[in-house]
Amino acid sequence: MPASAKLVSQYRMATKIIDGLVYTRLDFPVDQVHNIAARTIVSNGNEMIVLDSASGKVEYRLPVPEQTADLVKGVSQKTTSLFQKIDVPLLRKTFSDLQWDMESNEQKTHWVIHYPIDMLARYNTNPGQKLQSFKLYLDEANGTVAGYEQIMVEEDGTIITTKNTTLYTEKDGVPIPIGTVQDTHYDKPYTIDTSDSSVPPYNEETAPEISAAEAQQLIESGQAIELNTMSGDPSNPDYTEQTIAVYDSIELNTAADILFKVF
Image (tube, rainbow, N blue to C red; front, side, top):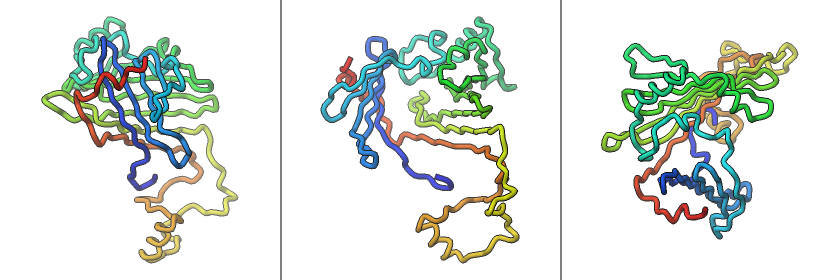
């Protein structure tokens, strides 16, 4: 919500390497608002199984969508630990051998990997959307994937730029991901005609004043929200969304194999 921070969803995720495969389990609680029972999703990277959390009954079994596959699969090191520093120099050599474009800062501690156009074409699986560019950000100093940026173009000309930043903490010298910050900007190919609008553009000089008590009453009744600024062009439909996801509880090496025994 604008100018507020609240918990909008929650789930529990467990991840473990079993026989060389990375298994992931997501447990979602009951959604009483939409009358949805608790659900569990388990995946080994190739298949995905949806279960009723209460009964354990398998409801759906389906392949993992190709568009969600890891874009660096096949060029990175074989996974030996879920939480370890990435060998960025080795990755850079691999990308260099593939003749991919790379950029770095002056200190060569941060790298930007540009994915080639011909590879991006394989991920254009959503009707009406085209993946125009994808950049992977590597932090060589800390041995982490710092995030990514992608640009998607829709049929009506809307340009969607998504920037995803991974948040880390450190445990015994190893970076542990604890959340993400995602900024999504929508650039619309048109403007809104406000010439005959009954609501005039906001003007600080002519706007009526109300007391702090009246403003608080409006906010508490849901008729107003508090914003740090009210500036902007009402004819411009462009906007930016920010989604922050942070784990409030992380336990290492505690997931039992039995959590994934559904395949």
